[in-house]
Image 1: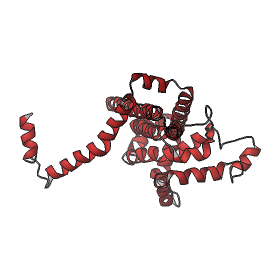
Image 2 (image 1 turned 135 degrees about the horizontal axis):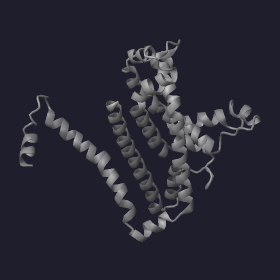
Image 3 (image 1 turned 120 degrees about the vertical axis):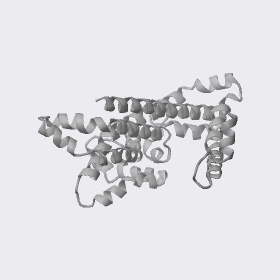
Image 4 (image 1 turned 90 degrees about the vertical axis):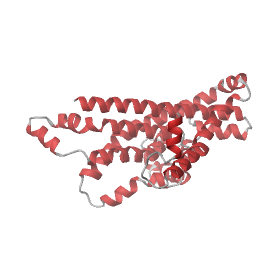
Length: 283
């Protein structure tokens, strides 16, 4: 331990100029802006005692909102996986006109303010919207329901899948597909065993990132969800409601559950990705 501290003070044996300063600033930034807020969020719900925390969690409205957020985020992430794969394939392997414009538009949900995304989706898919009105005549109601929530989460989560799969697909040699065809592989075997198999870790990573983003999404959802308790109310909105009611224990309890769920999802995704990577190397 002593040798490690001395090595750090001396520069860690690194040839990079400003190593100690850069590392110190990084640790300081991480501590103040990431570790400290997370610790405060974990500790705050327990400050009023275990009884207050238990009472805050005995709330059927909270569990309904959590179920709406988790189920909608999961479904949106699942639907984004094949859609993101197809878009990444079109961007990498396709030679379509306007490909650069489409590539730039993929990142649009990340650049737009979430409130702008929500208002745009509500305008398009609302009962009087450009797409909502004709769909309503066909019996398809998208806005102000869980379907609208899934639609909004798909919009904000799609870039995570595309940008995760795209670099892996670029590095995937096309010779493997040609060799598989020459060896007598059928088209579905080429797709599943030669193309999809190396992309599985990236697909799982994109799914996890989209799910984690969807669990805590707020601005792009509230305008199209309808926000009806026990039906289309999401957990982030209920946090705001509890804060307006000065129920800080209830708000922080919901926030803690969302935080732990997102962290657990990312850990599970990391484990699955490593397992798939090892399986792919063994093959």
